[in-house]
Structure formats: C-alpha cells, structure tokens
Length: 437
Image (cartoon, rainbow, N blue to C red; front, side):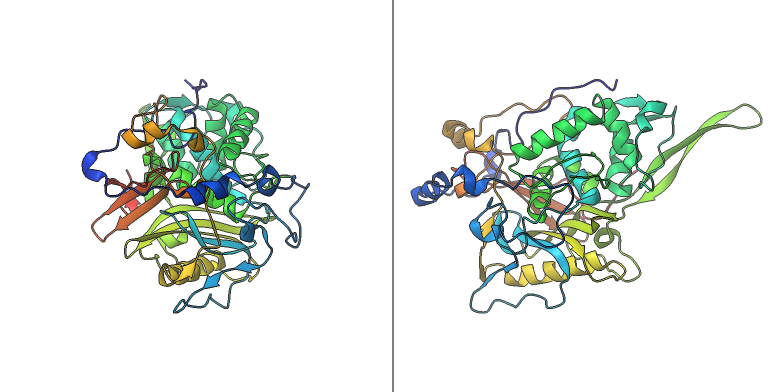
C-alpha cells in the first residue's frame, strides 16, 4: 500500500478499436509529414524558466504547435462570416482549440510562461491516475501532509484516517485539495519523486513551457506553465476514463473523521463536497455552461485565476484555457472562458487554424502496422481508463468529444498514434454534471 507502481509508457498506447465504432480514416498527406520533419529542434524549444513569470509576454516564445503560437498578442485568422473575438477579454493568456482535431482556432500569448495554480493538478492527475486501482486504501501518516503551503486549499484529509484512492481523487478534482495531492504523492514515494514524474510526463507530452516545482500548483519560484501546455494536459487527461468522470463530477460524499460516542460505539460519517469549477456547478453570477464536462480551475497570488474547460455543442468539442484575467471581478475567469466558448462554437469551421495541439513524443514512434490494425499496447496496473489510438497529421494528438444531453452524455475520443489514421470511439460513460456517491 502506497508503493510505487510502474508508469504506463506514453499517453496514447494503442488498444483494439471496436469495428462498429470505426467511422472514418484519413491518410496523412506527404506534405504534412514533410512539414513536420522540417521543424528544427530550435524552432520547437521552449525558453528556460526564469525564477518567476515575466510581467509582460516575451516577444518570442516557444513555437511548439506552430510559429504563430510563439508570437506575442492575439493570433486569429477570421475568414468570411467568422465572428469577431469578444472585445472584453482581459486575460494575460488564453487559447481556444478544437479538442477533436487539435486545431487552435485562436490564441493570445499561448506560450507565455505563467504561474499555473491548481490547473497544474491536471498534469498531476494525468501522471498518477494509472498507478493505483480506485479501491486501494491508504492510512494517512503525519508525514504525508507535511510541507503544504500556508493557505492551501484542502478537502479535509485527516491524519491516521484511511481513505481509498477514489476518495483522494475526488478531493483533488472537486475541492482542489492540496492535502489529497500530498497523500497521493506520498503513496508515489514522495513529493520529489512525483515532481520528477510530472516533469518527465510534461516533456513526453511536448509541454515544454512547463516546469513543476510543487505537484499541487502552489506558488513556488520557477514553477510555470502556459495556456498551451495546460490545454495539452487536459487533452491528454481526457483520454482516461476516470479523469473524465472525476472532472465532470459536480458533488460527492467525502469520508469524515472516525468518532466514538459516549457508549463507545465507533462510527465514521461523510460530508458533501462540491466542485469548485463554476461553469460546471454554477454560482450566483455564473450559469452552468451548456455542454460543459470539466476540466480544472485554480487560483493563487502569483497566478491569479486560471481555468481550463472542455465543452460540446452541436457535435463540436472545444478546449478553452484562460490564465490570469486582469479584470478584478468575481468569477471573471469563468466569464471570459464562457465568452471564448461562445465565440469558438460560432467560429468553428469559419476560421483558419493558427496552430495545433501537438501529440506526445511516444505517439510519433508508434508503428504504422499497429496503427492500421489497432493492436493493443498494454496499460499498467490500475489503469484509470482506456486510452485510445487514432491520429492527426503533422503532430496533432488525440482529442475528446463530449455529446452531453440532459439525460446523459457520450464521450468521443480521437487519440494520437503515428498520425496515419483518424478514428473515433464512442465511450458512453461520461454524464455531464455528474453527482457521485
């Protein structure tokens, strides 16, 4: 219990494709492959992290995903009939991307390296979710909760109490509990090892703007990420069934303290926790966004408010990341995200992409024969869900599709392999705004 299990190699290992779910295949053009091959390492390299995020965006940033994304300012190509971007956006950085194709529809300082706050927990979850089955139990030791920063968000984990892995992940996703993060890190041989694992996984995902110092996203010198990288983390995490379910959960029961009454009877109750993602749970000044299905929010002194969300409307699935709105208004990060979602759904198919979400490094090395046949690549012990294989030309990775109706929803994933075919698998296990026991 609490031991270190081997990581599943890569984010998009190949699995057998159900024949009835195969809807289409697209051959990658030689021109697209040539374009990918001509990208130099220098063009893809990210700047080394500074001790703290800069006050203004650098004139030149990482070109991962396309040269346009490495430029400061707003990048968008409005074709005929495309709506103009919202005028009242104040975020330092944001990105709107098609979760399925990987096309970046518009971006603003996409690779600006900023403090990520708890949106970094998406990388934490994507890295560690496959390590243990939900039912594994862990008794919390005093040392497990050591080292948390002052003012950390907490779900209410108590020393000497036993929790399942399922309980802890609910605490991470719904309440952004740094206490749950530290316990899971202790199960993973400690914070230092977890930070190392997260940095290695970020590199595998080609999230080169990211440097992890604390696994919970707490403000630390040198800890940075970008709107582009956070979107990669969300897209990768959405390949995993448990990630999708936790991210879409609105409320759940969390174990309380074990108590003994006057008669000596021992009992342990529970209390309800609510998801702090206001586009999912709603608030006094924010309505639940139509088609929302996650993903993760955050807020710290250095980061301000950050948020990455995924939503589906009319068969289109978009990922939007917003970092540090300058406007000091309640729930501003959600309001700007909602406006970008509104724009993206209207603009889809009417704008020329300004870049793309790249796939993980291991996907580019998958064999064409395995791609064509859909032969399986194994998942590790306790895999949280079934990553699926598919592809996109010139480095695009897998994506997530959510068909979320009133009664329930269906998640459609398009994941990356060697980028030789394009496939969809319906996974009818994601219900928008889930309430979990």
